[in-house]
Figure 1 (cartoon, rainbow, N blue to C red):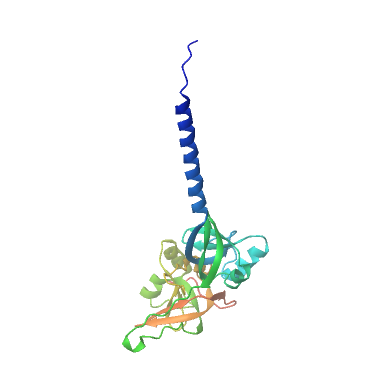
Figure 2 (figure 1 turned 90 degrees about the vertical axis):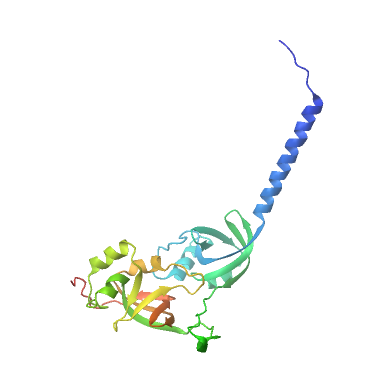
Amino acid sequence: MMRFPMNMDAVRASGLALASLATLLLSAQSQTANEQVTLTGTISDSKCGAKHMMSGDDPKCTRSCTKGGAQYALVVRDRVYQLKGKPEELDKLAGQQATVKGSLDDSILHVASIVPTRASPQPVDQSSAGTDDTPPPTTIEGLVRDIACAVQNKQATATVFNLKCAQDCARLGSPLIVLTPDGTLYTPISESIPDHDQRQRLMPFLGKYVRVTGPVFERNGTHAIAIREIEEVKNMPLKMDAK
């Protein structure tokens, strides 16, 4: 068997290079694990994430899940970050939009501070410039349905409509609205800017008569409501097979 001489200097150099590489990798991982971030999203829980099992009451569902062992979480678009720290503050903001600052370790966010994120109504003209307070909550009642038929079919009302048509339109992506008995259409929005889609929150109430509470925003005949609370109004007579 042939033996080849071993260059000990080369071996030592290789060992030092590998050690340096390992140190760099560990340093990079440490920096990533302690990354300081500021994220804005919805306070939810690790069990439900972006879609709550208890439809219509996100705060109640979040608190129920955390009492059952789930962790508070921050939902930012399609990502869910588990939250660590400040449980009392998180409990107060359950189901609400909030801005969280802290150190990010993979998908775990160690909370340093948390503040609610609220939208300010935009001024409609010069006379309203400077009025940046959120309007007081208003309660409305109406039918949750797609916007297309409510706009095009003037015979459709908050209690007389075609349920199958509303379901088909919603399934194909038509925006959902709340149609009140006087014919006013309210577009659902979030209280935070950028706006967050409210479709998932309304889908369980499609074709149902509901009571909604939240700030109402108006501009040039357009009405929008930031939903804080929503519940079905029971025993409301509805004709759901209108042509």
